[in-house]
Image 1 (cartoon, rainbow, N blue to C red):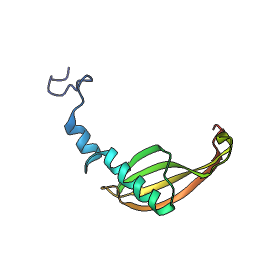
Image 2: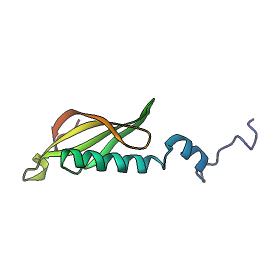
Image 3: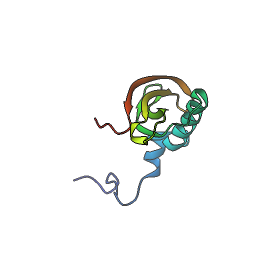
Length: 106
């Protein structure tokens, strides 16, 4: 049976574990900075982050962006981009992975 020191309470998050995982102000700060930089670069505000994972050199984010606004909005064309960002959220590179109609499902 594990000692009481090694048991992690599910009621209270351990702030030490979060800082080790996210670093440099947390994943929210990293995502915020990278989205602002990406939005400024492409001239549009990203809609949402659909994925985030740690890499050896920082973070890899999946971001959706409206590329062509249409009426009705369910026919608008969106794209998913992969953003490669460093530890502090600075944009290192990006690429478009796919385009799709807002009303489409996978």
